[in-house]
Length: 147
Image (cartoon, rainbow, N blue to C red; front, side):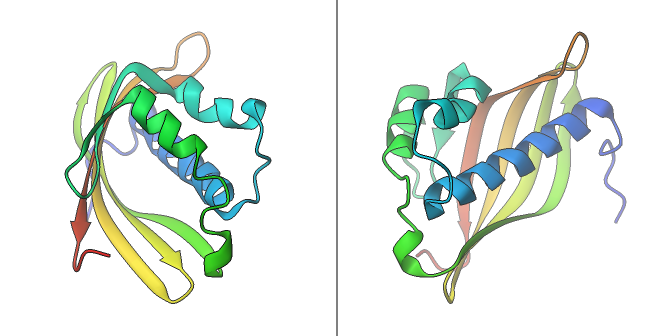
């Protein structure tokens, strides 16, 4: 399948941000990332002030809720064996500069347990004068049985 728009620089920047932030989440949740304000600032600097999220269970969260929750999850997956996050099936749903609406599947593997969620994320992307990608909204829905 050819995905329209994935070769656009704004789309590429949004896709790279998804990969990079989930690599951070994997390191943070597994306890491999250092538990410091400086390291965690990676999250705070990329979530827009107006960021909202709908969790897979349907809970609506604002930016302060998400940041507070994430801060408290450092090392939360460390005792569950190996932990890995993979991003698959990226799809540009809308490309209207500077906005990019991206769909993707997030797969988390914790030991022998695999969970999947369909994610739709809205980004504001600027590539002139230095690349900046801000998450504006995220909606996640469980795929398959709920954990």
